[in-house]
Length: 234
Ligand code: URA
Ligand code: SF4
Image 1: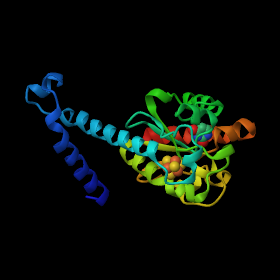
Image 2 (image 1 turned 45 degrees about the vertical axis):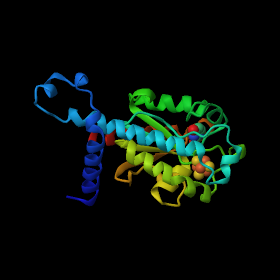
Image 3 (image 1 turned 135 degrees about the vertical axis):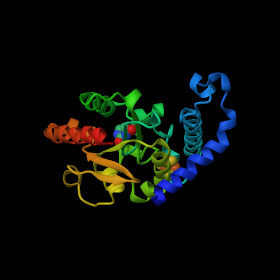
Image 4 (image 1 turned 135 degrees about the horizontal axis):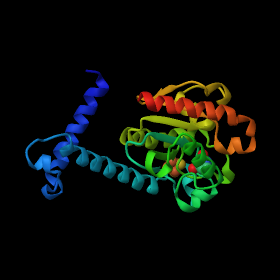
């Protein structure tokens, strides 16, 4: 058994101990009540625990003053989506619309992102969790500073572990560099599959960049096909 498997097993077991007594018997499928106990008996509670832990993380983010960006935010943008998504999409940081609403990718880039996802039959509300490297908007939409990103990164690390996506799609240079650990530009980083915390990671251009530079559209299409293939294999 690998170390990762071992820790996951311990983690799941702890979830089970914490939550199994809360399972309401009326709500269980008949075959569980019949005594043919299956994974269903602990699947829901484990997800409940992960949801609780994600909510606690969101609360911590909403109170966070760990870097200077907290002073300029209207709302932090912790990220939004489903547990066990097919894809976790990771952008750079909130823009003006996201800062206003507290939700990720709701502006022009977000609408364009939705089109990319639908091109490979993915729906934001059903198949995705969408987040960012940093949770608070940098003034004037400047790039996050390296120290801001590294101060904020533990939130994302915990989100990835709790959300358990099948595949990660990063958008733009900053997310690709930080999560792959490589220093090349996005044009060189894309076109390959990496791994982040045990999850296959595929970098592509940022939708804002592609809106400004339509010549990147072909590359994005290749990256989306790479993503689809990784999903088929996951
Ligand atoms: N750009 C990003 O990188 N993230 C958002 O949430 C919105 C725009
Ligand atoms: Fe905290 Fe991240 Fe916001 Fe900085 S950007 S204040 S580290 S949540």
